[in-house]
Length: 469
Image 1 (cartoon, one colour):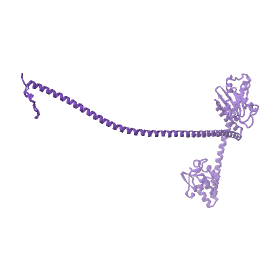
Image 2 (tube, helix red, strand yellow; image 1 turned 60 degrees about the vertical axis):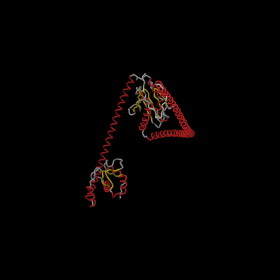
Image 3 (cartoon, helix red, strand yellow; image 1 turned 90 degrees about the vertical axis):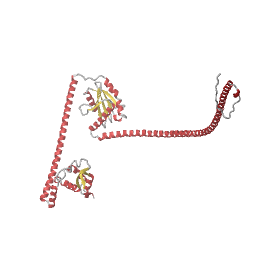
């Protein structure tokens, strides 16, 4: 058996057991092996034990630190929670108080609003009631004034022609408002009514009377005659604005009559006394519809009727021609009169100018040196045509010459300025010129562009400074 030698490094103080001196190599090897195993086992056990003991201490220390920290935190959080709870209770009390105050304020506002709204409603109701009452009074007053104005107009119009034209205009406007139709005034045509109303299915005559007396039978018969001469007319209306109609006044101020051919005439009295005239006329629509639903009236074919119609047409044509001729002659006479008046005015102006020139010649021939000098000055004085109607002062009458000389002495030419007529009148009065005369010089002495008709200023002149001081 071979042997191994082992060199060991041991501490200096280590004493080698005597066993290793006397023991056999096998025993020594076994002792070393067992010692090594024992040492390894013991070291492992000791390390594990130390590790276990050290871990337990660390856990205990950590648990202790954790408990201490947890206690501190719990104490801190408990204090914080108590503080927050107190804060929450305080805020809750304040919120409750605010809610109570808000509820009380809201109730007070609602109460005030209800009271104010009730007061406003009552006040507005009173205002509306007052306005309605005032409007009713105003309407009544306006209606009364309209009646008074209509009566005044009727009395003011002197001729029956003017009254008739006024009545025709009133009824024409009422018909346009009451019916869907075309309206034309035909009173100037011979043997017709005053107004011709044309609807889609027929034509109607309206005769208007604006009298201060009742409409007599002659007017009624004349309207019937006009209706007979116009068989194309379906029906007729004879209207009296302010008076009744003889024999045709019934309850409601309305009556009807039928002609021989079946057409009817409606008589209306006191039309303007109706509360609502337009509505009153609208109630007559069924009469118009009934007339339009009947068969169109045919003219009789007898020779006598045809001959009469032809004669009536010829007479009507002759009357129209005669009327037109009279109108032409009247217009011609009016034109001649205007031309004669213009010629007379021009001739009179020539006479005045000739008289003025003759007077100047006599003054030069027989007058004193002062008068001759004055005439010479007037003859040589030239006037601006943009202001005055004549170029020379001598061309005016003596009185106009004095006035123009006065005005020239008081004013200066200035196309951008103007003088007031009232100032001219006042200053002229002081120097002996009457207001009526001064105003009359506009036509005899001035251009229209300087002093227009009805004007209150004279353009192109300004007052001299010395005249205003």
